[in-house]
Length: 238
Image (cartoon, rainbow, N blue to C red; front, side, top):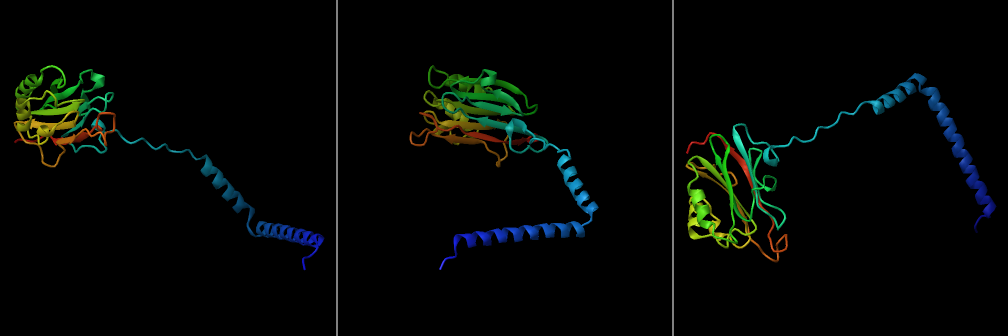
């Protein structure tokens, strides 16, 4: 049999009053047991902690050519980024200097090439060769062949780098160590770095390719851009 509503209300009221009395008693007991100066010290410590000046965390240090980690001392940093779609143009960075890119105004459709003197790390020449319109394959072959000894050649595509690429140019690039130049197709993203007159270490990124595939393309008609980056020791002799 359920108790009347009035009785239940009285029980709740009694419980509330009992809890209030207990809380008041415990508060008085703690105030009596804990010295006043201890409470003041604790409060002041909290206040001082809140007012303590915050030391700002410095942002991560930017590395050459936007590497994630720095190159060892006595080495060159490089980063080669292919074009992506119609709007994202190719870039070649060497020792934190943009050699080819939109900001330099020297990037174009086809194959972009930068020649760097290995001894000084300074750029000697940059040029792009349109492989969609015109006949520039022979000129590119001549540009590559005439690169001085002890040079680094950094190459990258933007848009199409294959349609008018002739056999002589493929031979010249393959002679520098390219394994993918004969596999390049319409609008393939391709990046390559080579040395003339000496050999690069085997453990660095030298070449990468990504073919256009309508089922996998990041952009409408274009594959995703690709990049290679790494560090080249400055004391290579052969």
